[in-house]
Every structure is written in C-alpha cells, then in structure tokens.
Length: 167
Length: 90
Length: 131
Image (cartoon, rainbow over all chains, first blue to last red; front, side):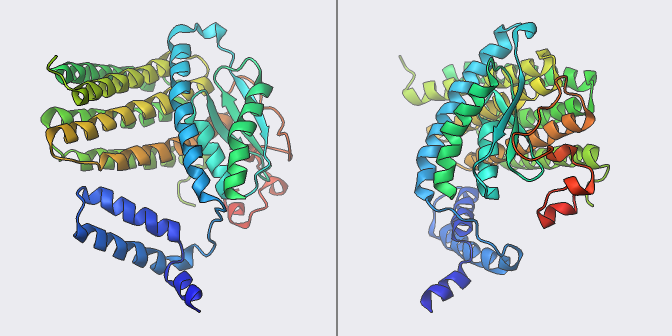
C-alpha cells in the first residue's frame, strides 16, 4: 500500500532528482528557499505529466553509471587530442575514413541511445544510422586503418558496460 | 595578469574560428555542410558570449548564452528535419 | 611568482578552450569528405566550449562570488551534440553525398534513413508515422 502510494506520487524518481538538481543550478546560490521550491517542482512536474510517459525506463544498476562516466570522460579528453593531431598535421590523402558496422547486443532504446551518444562524444567516431529493426548501428570513423578493430573496441569497452547498467 | 593574456588569446581564437566557419558556410557545397557550419557558429557564439562575461566579470550574459545554446540546437534539428522530410512538423 | 594556482588553472582552461574551438573550425574547413567534416566541429567545439565555461566557473570562484550555473550549459551541450551530429549525418546519407557506399547492416536488411517502402519501415508503432 505504502509503496504503491509512493510510486503514484513519484512516478519517475530519476526525473525528480534531475529537476531538483537543475533548479539548484538555475538558482545559482545554495539556499533553503530554492531547495524547497526545487523539491516542490520535482514532485509536482513528474506527477502532473505522468500520463505522457507511462513506461519507466529500466536502469538495473545505476551506480555503475559513475565509473562508466569517468571512463567516457577520460576517452573524450585523450581522443580529442588524437583527433586534433589528425586534423592539424595529417594531409587529407592520408586520412583513411570509412564506415564501421556494429551488430548490437543491447535491445532497450535507452541503452542504444546511451551507446550512440557515447560513440559520437568520443572523437574520431560518429554514430549515424540504425538499421530498420534496431539490430545494427552504422558508425563513421574519421581515421581507422582497421574498421573491425574499432567495432571490437566499441563493443568491448562501451557496449559490455552499458549492458550491465541497463539490462 | 596571466588571465588577461589568456582571455585575449581565447577571444582571438574564438573569433578566428567564427571566421573560418563563416567561410565554410558560404562555400557549402551541400546543405549538410551549411547546417553543420550554422551549428558550429551557434556553439562558438556561446563561447564568445561567455568570454565577454568573463571579461566584464558579470553574470548577466549567462541567460543569453543558455538561450543561444538551446535555440542553436533546436534550429539545427529543424533545418535538418526540413531537408530530410520536406516538412518540420508532420 | 604572484600568480596563484587558481589563476593558472583559469588561464589554462581558457587557452585549451580557445585552441580546441579553433581546431574544430580548422577541421571544418580543411577536411575533404562531407562525412569527415562532421567529426571536427561536433567534438572539438564541445570540449572547447566546455573548457571555456569551466574557466568561467573558476573565475567566478576566484572573484569571491561563487557561480556554477554554467554547468547547465555544459550538460546541455554534451547532451545535444550527438543529436545534432546524428541529424546532420542523416542529411548526408539522405542526399547521397557520402563517397563510399554504405555497408550492408550486420543484422536486418536496410538502414533506417534509406527505408522508404512500407515493408522496410520500423516495426515500432510510434515510428511508423515517420516513414
């Protein structure tokens, strides 16, 4: 009874937390006023709009998002330097860009979105298209001698971890 | 003092990159390149506004930067969608 | 030296931000293929602007008037950059401007942007209206 009541009052707990955090950042100074109003908004908005998002996205192991985020941040910084070197010092005729074809093992839309976003944010690769039934991802690599190697690295480094987080 | 020099350098770099992006916007050749150039222009404009805010040591430019970032994203998606579908809202 | 560590950090963030923003635009101008051009600005600019915003946060702390709402713009840019890149890539594919032909999907029959006929449209009901 009590859990069902809480579920009705807070249909999307992660959204509520995000709303409180965004309100704190917008207010731009820590105070009790903004915290209270942020909590009011965080409870009221998901409750009022619950009818529009009936399904709760499933995140089975949310705590693993933190090491994943750190790995991605590190990759963004190192790969940015690599791409900057390629852009500045490699002549155009030496750049071997090409398509990378990644068969997907993850199935939920949230996990695929997270994987595509991660691939685009790490420089050197951009995720461009999904196959018609969502079982393969098309990625464009700026400089890849061996596309198979890039696909293997993405599957091992990101997709394996996202599968643990979301499924 | 060191911050002032760094600020001048950042102003020069961002202005130069706006100029280079402008050349790509004029040259094209395809619609995709022009959309990309416009998107880059809006992101660089955010950087320039933040730099003005640092130079003036004020916070009043924050909202302008936020709104340009948001409108830049929405207009990129709208133009890309127009090219893809011939319509924005179906 | 009269500089403290915070000043040096602000200056470093500003210089790194300016450099990466510039590299993004140089890549946009220099690279040949339309798909390759997509790489430079979406990433370099994101990190460049992120670095400049970080400098703004540090600068506010150094001034003694703490302010951290620039983090919102950083979060917004990092969330939207993949979406804009994805849409521009779709435009390139749709207009057939890529030089190398697309590979066949590892699974399924066809890439979603190329799916035109009724039997190729995604099986998800909400996406059917798009095709």
